[in-house]
Image (cartoon, rainbow, N blue to C red):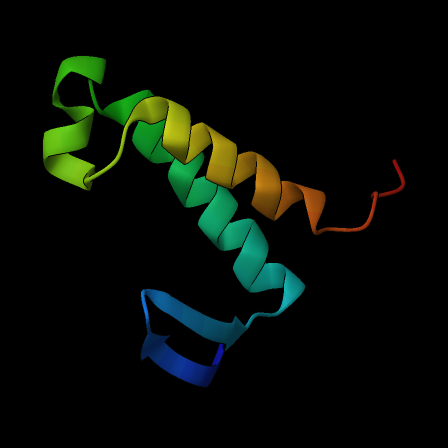
Amino acid sequence: MEIVSPINNDVALVRLTAGEIVLLANALNEAREAVEEWEFATRLGSTPAEAEALRRELRALLPLRKA
């Protein structure tokens, strides 16, 4: 990961490898499965739906993998 621009006006720019994107998407998925919905926002600072939306956006960045 490379920080291109630190947080400014609530936005940061970072450069991630495909492997780092996979790691983040998988971590979001694991968090959704491990944390109960009623405590998700308290423990992670977002709703399960927001986490899922971010996971999908991250996955959409990756090229399709051949089987």
